Image (cartoon, rainbow, N blue to C red; front, side, top):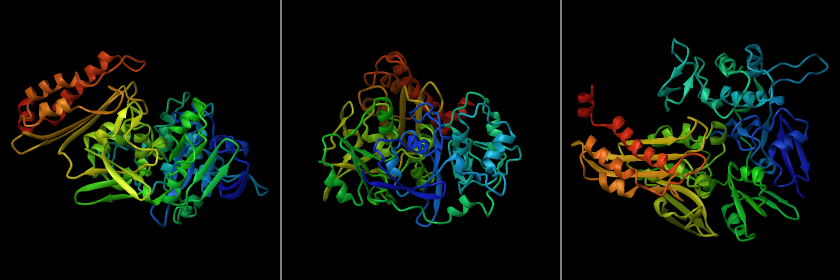
Length: 504
């Protein structure tokens, strides 16, 4: 097997004989870096979190927290990783080492008890500590919750301390001991990184470039192609080739179902899949951009996506997961598909020398099946402009954050000055074998006045959409009821101004 090179805690080293399916977590622990732990092996607990150097434009680096339990170690060939052990300074002949500010605040404020989850919390907290946009708040009460965070539009899901620390950057980290308040206190006590801070200074330099990687074993190959054409050349080399970007889905299959694809192709660093362009008539989002990158790049241009982002898994997952991957898995409960359906999104499918654009509403043909051919990849998504002037996303789950949907509903309607509905698009997840458009409801709404009577009539049709089933997350009856209630909730939130005056 070929050698991979990886910078760990500031030291570049070469490693030979790394299996393509060895997780980054196991690889690091084999090197004696045992701070990162395995808790769930599904990216839900954060005990395995580490920092990775990712591009922040062409000439800067952003320290990004990710789950080490999901991606393969070989995917980090040529990259830089920092573990909890690498944040502080190690003891040496001149005396004891020094704690990193995050580690010091966690210790001082009682943020660690049994310690199992602490290294993961520390790494996720460090990523937020170094976030360039983090600025102190002028909120005299010391905590900010609402739509304005660091001068950007965000969901009310964001809660920021007086130091600008977004508490939801830790939403993917679980702790059974502390009750979280000491951890929050530690986060809110952090100041600004000092000028001499090595990790801060590293951010002022470009991130590592992607490395061409090829690792072969008797049963498995991992390839990071250098170009898109090279990727297409590999697509027909194995019957079960798997494309991987953030590995947030494949990693779970490897860990839990013991899946071992014979060929894994890494697409996350291909420039052609990392576009983000806004034109007069559409927004194009590259399939390999992480959701966090899309969120920063769009900067509030698509309010419906801003409602989706905080409810899509956790920050650790969003730092790795992609729209291309979420749609490519074909899951009927993926959170992005209903929103993208409501936005009338198209999927750009690319093959060697060719591209075609398919409406997302026509993309899925059955359970985890689509019109994409074996020689094609999802290159990008296109959202037409202008956007509807009223939109909302409702995720019904057992937990408010970091959970799988029982039902997901995205609604986007255009209401003219006469309070009449001129267009309507509604995307649904969790109520059929694929994500679906609620076309009967849309037809019921279009051309009607936006009144309570219209909403009630449409809600009754909404309750009949899809083919919901009974499973461990919800009953079919409950799912149908949530469909109906979501439209009534939408009416209550988006009723015309004159109706709001009457209701007061």
